[in-house]
Amino acid sequence: MAGGRLRLGVNIDHVATVRNARGSAWPDPLRAAILAETAGADGITAHLREDRRHIRDADMEALAAGIGIPLNFECAATEEMQAILLRLKPHAACLVPERREERTTEGGLDVAGDESRLAAYIAPLREAGIRVSMFIGHAPAQIEASARIGAAVVELHTGHYSDLHAEGRQDEAEAELAALRKGAALAQSLGLEVHAGHGLTYDNVAPVAAFPEVMELNIGHFLIGEAIYRGLGPAIEEMRRRMDEARGIR
Ligand code: PXP
Image 1 (cartoon, rainbow, N blue to C red):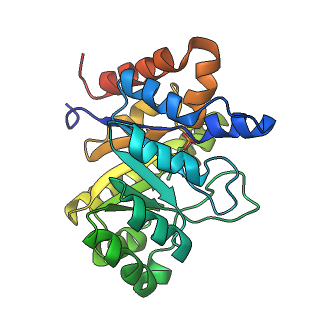
Image 2 (tube, rainbow, N blue to C red; image 1 turned 90 degrees about the vertical axis):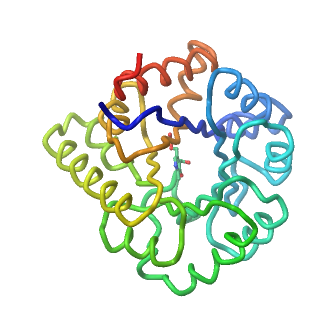
């Protein structure tokens, strides 16, 4: 059997995307986060982007103060974000690469290529008791560099696997899964907690959820979309059910 119950982090960024499309006050990301908590989410993830295209500073303040489950604050490794992290002191900080022209976080962070800067960047976060997570691909060099700089967690980017799966490129999706699994095992052997996320849906979540090394999945876009049809609570409950099933938990 796979390694115990998986945590589900629900990313509520796209509640803010819908709100911002009309420049109004609703739907409110905090209300969605509280609903997610009630539906069994183990954490809330939100990404404060440099351009504030969805989540805004006031949302992060409200989430930090208003939810009873851990907040995973996703951001780029910039000075501005470091200051906000040190003020809000969320449970976790997930560092991601960010480019203004991208629609979503397209690749993993280059920890190996920016190792000394990132080591210095995360030192005060660690000192403040924030669990630092690096959002990376499965390349061993990135995993090893994340361990060397003292990150607590690596979140493995499942976006490429999800794309291959959606395009019906089954052999390539299997190969990508195998590489992710190898990366998860390496990360665990180096003492890193392993998370995964990006592009996960009801149809593609099971093989990733079954990796015994993975402790947490972070899922957003699909769940917020699915909430249109079934409501946020039932959408989350169904994901929870599929994750539990993949772990052999009934
Ligand atoms: N994890 C990280 C680090 C992300 O950047 C994102 C996307 O914001 C997710 C998980 C969730 O991805 P998705 O919205 O595709 O489920």
